[in-house]
Image (tube, rainbow, N blue to C red):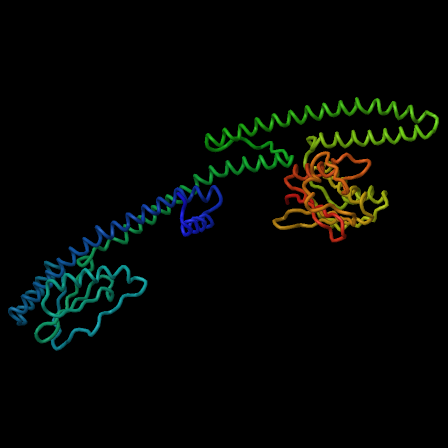
Length: 454
């Protein structure tokens, strides 16, 4: 069933207002029903119990006041008033005084605005009870005295004033019930926060360990913790991490063996050509061997990936300067704009390989290269490589990162490369938890932005 547009708008509004963290949502799941239950119980208590009890008490008080007024009207003498006053004081806890020549106040005293919702039901209940029992004009005030209710009735020759204890007019223990409900809600919320926080912390540790492993950092202190399901997930992560590490170690050992086996015949061929008589054919063979050696290096670098290298603090200025020297030897003008104190936590050799690919690629297609580094939002690090080369069309930016991609009439079209430079660079950046993005450079060529987490 499709929701109407107003329902979809309300649903989107609720989604924006709901907490996004697991801790916030779990707390909401537990606390919201408890709070709703407490509100419902409090409402039922006041509506069905407190107001009913207050109404009964008001009716009883109104009956006693009606008795006192009728008794005095039957024999309005000082002796009669003295007897009924004494009886009311002893039997009904009512203090009655006769005020000859007085009149009822013109208007009732309003309660404070803050307490108006609390006093309004009391006033309505007492007013209804007095109206039903008394035929004479009356006036009352429930707010002037903390412990008493002031009630005045017009009688012959003046006003009869009755001061009744507050508990005779309404149930005075309602605030205690509300207090206990509030304390219970706060206590249950605090307990829920403690338990939920303990469970969420285990999930956060698992997420941090997985993120650190993705960046190549080691977390030897991580152990399964928390609920049974979370411990199962943590154990599965540890098993997966162990399998991946074994795979990386085996691949590294295999690549080292392949590298040695391939370089041995290449070395013999290079030695043979070095001893051969110089000629045009030997020169071409030397170039072919150099190209073959370069391709093998790129294949191995791409397949090696991170190679199990540990992350450590790296100062960027010396690393970028070392990379830029190779580009300067190609004849490019390289300008480095990096703060000497700027550092990042990274795998030095992998990061150097990625930046070398980007800077050398820029120098191969332009004669001016600028390398800058800065802190971006949320502490992330950005390394920007600009050049004034021909650039790449925007629609081919993603294709340039594909392994072995050689874009015709683009930057990857070079005799020596095999289309792995940008693929290796992005693989390294993503291995650090970041990425590489391409854009149009202010210099007119290509801009490569390496983003690394802070």
